Length: 368
Picture: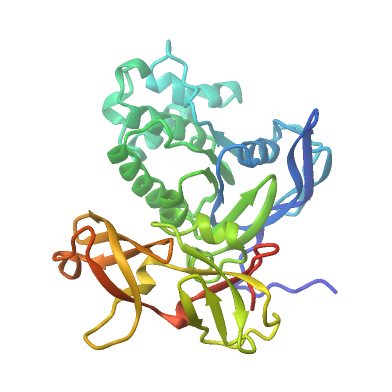
């Protein structure tokens, strides 16, 4: 029996079911599946060559899957043409027409669709106002800043009033400040119009700061899907644990001891806050601990002895790299707590046992 959606449950805007795609011997997507709720800001996150662009192009109808199914608002569009999907895509390269003004770049998709002149003018000016481009309509792309060009590319998609907006690494070509500004702009537009957005990025900051839900990709497969908090707090495996969080999670090798209540690691015995009933004593393990979950020991408190290797002040926080038993651990400390620390200094540190993440050494999966 199919589930009945309550009035408060958003409908599914997009669903990819067991989709695969190969280019010769290269497998771009391998049995990939995920769903996106209507109105969600959904992020495809992962490094280059994991299948993000292929996935977006498949949703847009530019690429057909070898097998699997692409559904848009409950209808099968797997082998259907591009037209009529209600999907628009913004490419990484902006893809503006250099010989046309901003006005004509924005108007172009409407003219191709046969929209009347009056309606075109109304929608161009409405879109320009929304993106703060009113004063740029008579300019050509070559005279605009990178951020302005990105807004024109975005406007050319928004003017079509798509039901789903696809963004393929749209901020890659912008400098740090413009990326920050455009992240805020995209979040504003999402809130204002309730668009369903599928956003591909290799940038962890973009993924965590913008995504309401994130799919972490690896080798054409979704490894884990969840909110930013879920991915940060409960990574399913070592791959996700290493991709989410900056500085990245510290990893220490060891083995389970004392009936699953301790891990015997290279930096000493580490107590586990919960009994690991699904693992065996002596089984190889990897202990993960976030830099923010390690602190300096208080006076008289026992801890792990470490030598400071590097101190990196970052304004209100400081990243401290410490050497202990041949392992390098990174801590994130408030500026005041780190102000007197110096390279070569011996200190004692405490790892929060309630924040340890334990993974199987054999396959990298989290032990629950």
